[in-house]
Amino acid sequence: IAAAKELKLTIPIVVRLQGTRVDDAKAILANSQFKILACDDLDDGARLVVKLAQIVSLARSAS
Image 1 (cartoon, helix red, strand yellow):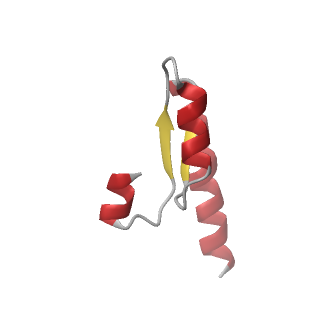
Image 2: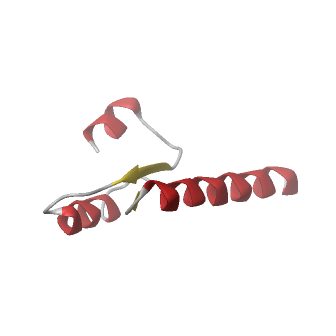
């Protein structure tokens, strides 16, 4: 989150989280002002990135 603030990110970021306090980390990300989306494994992350790219593409073609 600190890096997202410093870089002033406006695009969605997909991260894979694992560990003993993963639920706490997901809650922190969900409550942040940034579009940082957590996934449990790389396959889920890849699917999420593809869906996000499709949404952005549709939005751009509609305007």
